Length: 80
Length: 415
Image 1 (cartoon, each protein chain N blue to C red):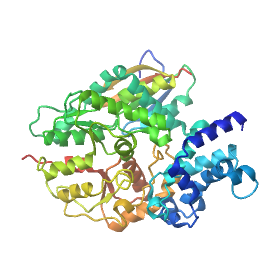
Image 2 (image 1 turned 135 degrees about the vertical axis):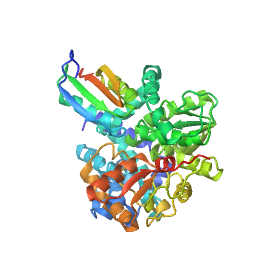
Image 3 (image 1 turned 90 degrees about the vertical axis):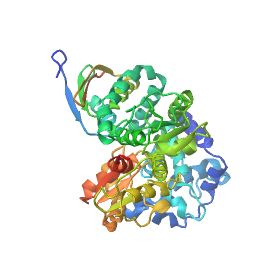
Image 4 (image 1 turned 60 degrees about the vertical axis):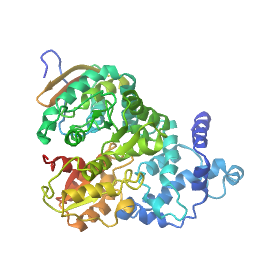
């Protein structure tokens, strides 16, 4: 977890095939308040382009993307 | 329901009424032969799981608004008003049908239930009650097509991360691992977003010394699942434009039945050949461009024919040819090929999750697999793979589900 950013909810999406990670994040973001942060961890490489495209169409904001030893971590802020 | 909305929905209905559709809506005699063809009814014999029941929901609206009897005497016969209750029934009809079209094989009049359900799906879009997940996924796909430059760098990085695994599967000489943006390539391979859809095929294409390039776009077409003809075209167009830009000779679609059917049959003729990856693997094996070790994979293997690539697109013998090279221990399901039972995961149902429905209506498929005695069920479709794996877990079959590409990649040998 980031030191500067307070995460309200974490979703472990490791091993889930496409398109489950985006579907679950789309549901998960509705379970936090506007302005709060969702942390999503996935192993799906397609998420690196899928998540930003989803964020643009759904009006949410990806604050940070990290990659380390096959794991991809997104911090997503619910905007509306 | 407001008058304006009702008129909008009727306009959408009217837009689908070409001659074939009027025929499908007019000729049903309700003989009921279709009921036994449906995987859902074969598993759970409920009236609402029959193709004719699903079609009747749409047909009754047609009778009410587009036939003179319904217009003049709406209180007589079997016509139905468009209202909120009808919209709920349309949802149930459309999203308990996978669009597998097995019923069409048995219908004496060749009625295409999937085509009829495309009206239901279009009305649901117009009513803003189509599944939000499918619309969201379709919109995200279109967004990627519009703003590729924004996502290109992260995609390239993700692909770079997969290269080690490709090399570990194919240890032969190759000056490429996962090529991107190669102008003049023979093949544009269109994968799904997951590594499992890229790594095995990349290994096979490299083993065949193919001049290929990986698409920036995922193959899956959520516009088709949600039944939106405009979004279906837009999503496919991203790949078509990329293929034309790169001047490739062939577009090879990964193991995704709907993606293949859309590109092969539903978006018109293209200036390139369209192939399913099973067809490409069969070709390489026939031409000795790749070699595999027979029986490296242990256990009895059966094959699940994906409805969209087999029954609805004709990729029937190629997967079997590939499996014959991989194993001497193969057993067909009964029935098979174009008469195979749907697994119950198509039409966007896997993406919608809806696990209770998928579990109960998958029973016939589970029995079909069990009867073969197989320990591995191979398939060539992502939706089918996800659904078969889900059914295996729920029914504790102990049968492993494998993609054809993975079986081939794991059997590759150096010349």
